[in-house]
Length: 401
Ligand SMILES: [Fe+2]
Image (cartoon, rainbow, N blue to C red; front, side):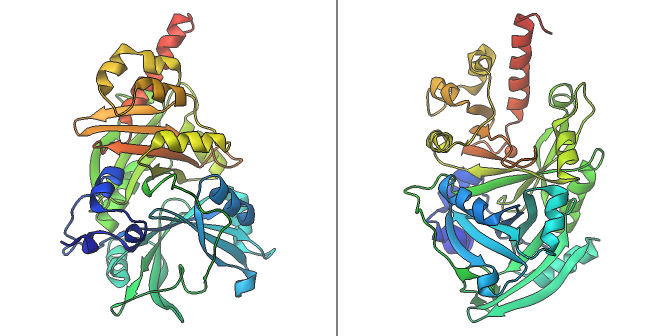
């Protein structure tokens, strides 16, 4: 397979190579010829926000994303504004209502800022929709062509958890690749601040929170409808229920570009973080997006200097001899990680560095993770235990346990 076959257009444009993607997001070789629902990769993550005009400025000025396309009243779209932003191979679309009767207003009233659409690029929309229908998925939009002077995109949409959807986007129709800025109807746009160096290069995974008792149903949905495989890592009641009060399983597309950990709340002593999300989001939805970076230290420093807040990590986490022994050698001194609150996890394949932001909006719902992988294809399972146990040890020292 030539690199051209392996890399998506977005990855090529971002100047990423196969080796980098293996490291950044755990890309694996995959023969999709027999797959009834082949997926190339992420197409776009579409957010509904209360003020897309300001959110677009935030994602450019704080997160260093580049504005590349726009649709709104000036381009003939009366209902809402949509800003298309990019960092590396990831595309975010921010939608905000303009018309007072826009359906986005009631969506936002129910959910607040959040992800409405996890759009996936596929080589053959019709094949995917036939498979989705046969497997019992809810088809929200039948396959249809969108055309403008730059060519044609073929799209369809299926329902996922809650009010989240997966739009399926086929960007090559009849052997011709769509040449426009994003989708028909969008015009190219340029932003105010080209970043000197990207803060993140790719999207690693998106976690979905679903209701109590429904995790396996959604794992089954991704297995049956999209042919996703289960990844080894899941957080069972051996670890999670006592501390973090969640259960989690991970499904991935054949090439592992698209990875969906799925959480459900678990009964615990305190109100689960998943229950809190479900209450404030008004149902199931996307909980966090993990952004892959090759230099998490720099990214965290830059983001902090711009006001992004991260979850605190207790010093005890780093001083714990058990953890030190478990993480072994990592590329920077542990002191550098401790200074920034960056977590480490290691498994048989390698290690990863990760950190979580506080919720991005007003509601305690959506947040980001930054992740720097070094061989590990996990999701930080070890940190649940280490983090919560180290907190517990601190409590014990203080006589509060
Ligand atoms: Fe994550």
